[in-house]
Image (cartoon, rainbow, N blue to C red):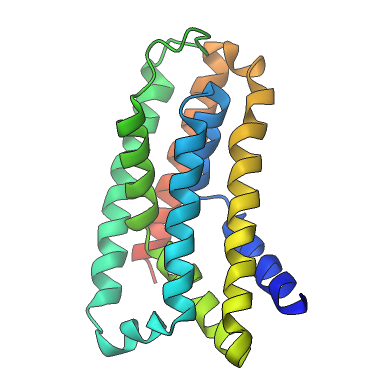
Length: 199
């Protein structure tokens, strides 16, 4: 149980950091749009990456030196484009939260966007595969319990973030609120992109 709790604590501390994936889940949660599918996409993706890290895949970055710069620049490019789209909505968006669900993206588009924000983000690999994998290795035979705790943290966090965001719905009924959120998301995406390519 102690090992599971340790995995839960470390996993939660890494997942809870504000990033592109979390911002997207928050947005979907506020709109009450495909929340379950988006949350489960994040949870399953994290579970795969965490288990790969626990299994010792963290050595990939040492075995393949080109892996790190490719994922870093590719992730930065994707985040820059996503930030530009958010900034466009911030300046030209006119809609508030629509109770009838009109104007929302399809379930397929939401899941694909979530997958891109997850798997094209180099920080995800550093946090789950490399860092969590390295910490889990210290637990020896119990490393799988540590990994299970980290997966549990992912499940709890994304469910709370996705479904808890719905309580903000009245605030986001106003178009200005969405524009402020999109502006903040754009700045966040660009900041993360710069952090990937700058020393």
